[in-house]
Length: 130
Image (cartoon, rainbow, N blue to C red; front, top):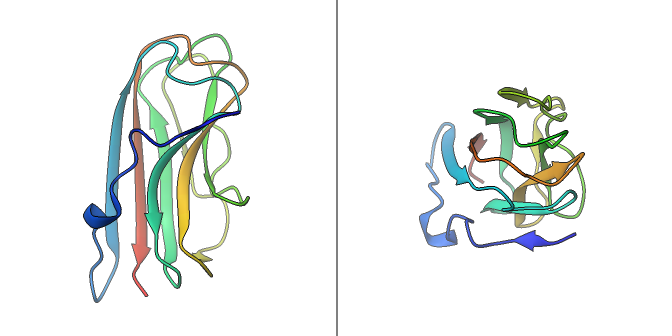
């Protein structure tokens, strides 16, 4: 299991509105072999006190044999269920809105198998800044 930080949005570029909901839209052209099963690809670090209102992860095509993706918080806590293997799929937030008690990274967790095919990955996070 590895944590891949190469594609993480730099802290200085994470948007934060004073009022209302802030969107983060993150995309990645995932190449064959970019990550193994149980690896985490970091998306963005959100500040303590932020409320995650909604989120989803999707991929544009199969990631390989039985590879799936889900969104989770560092330190544990899934935000979505897993996408479906074998083709394009999306998984939406499956838990109540999450209030963060510390600065927390949202990451894409690879499951089922290694990524062995190229596909586009997209993550959308809607949150209220503290």
